[in-house]
Length: 333
Image (cartoon, rainbow, N blue to C red; front, side):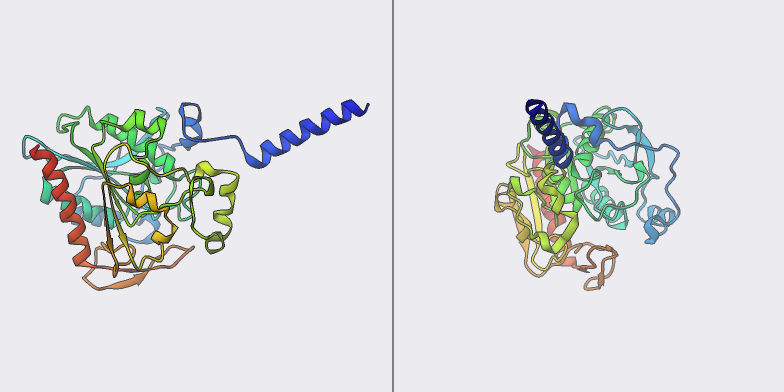
């Protein structure tokens, strides 16, 4: 009887521990479906996404094509929204995939897309991971809609782009800010699954004022008490804030000294120093590329953290010109 009771207690302990710690969902071939939240293809983008801007008016302002469900997700269970803007005007044409931040797609991405088209003659794909799944934002970041979902969406985008007649598959790049910057770090991380899927297929990534959250076991050092309950779960679910770096391909990182949203103090030092190049702008805030007049400041609509964001033409231009230089060097070699 004592033996039976002991076995029962052991099994209960194992099951309870499994329930508490969760099933390991580290990104791999076996966990793809976990990282592919359901896509509702009946969902339509509203006139005013997240009540920030008029969708139609902004696309017209920046001369961009409408978001359509252009290609299948990684697991082939629904099509993703994207704005595909081919712009072939030269023999070697760069293609830039733009990933949004935690706010979802907004005019910052539209403004960047227009700049890349006009100044690099680039093909531009603005990829959406949220609207595609009927979701508007993910300010909490370390959720099932976080960076690994975006990684798989980028891989799906690259596969589709490589088949398009306007695209030279040797020159595909990724650009993103905030959570999109997190994606730009993660997509180049030398992780077995990611390296197999991405190395040699995406040339470089550009990470702008990035989230650089890693679970404690990967070296994450942001203070838990600042973010409260939406990071405490990382002890038991570290895959929601996976490792960043070292990198299998070049990463260019741009950070801000007055960033109260994604402060570099939260980054393991190697996340920044392992980059091909890291530029830090001491007087800049998060979202320095807001599409407003130079020097205009506002507070973010993020309900978790209404951080300060100020437009800086100086920093915006410095970052874009650096990106232009990197890509032009690639095209000339």
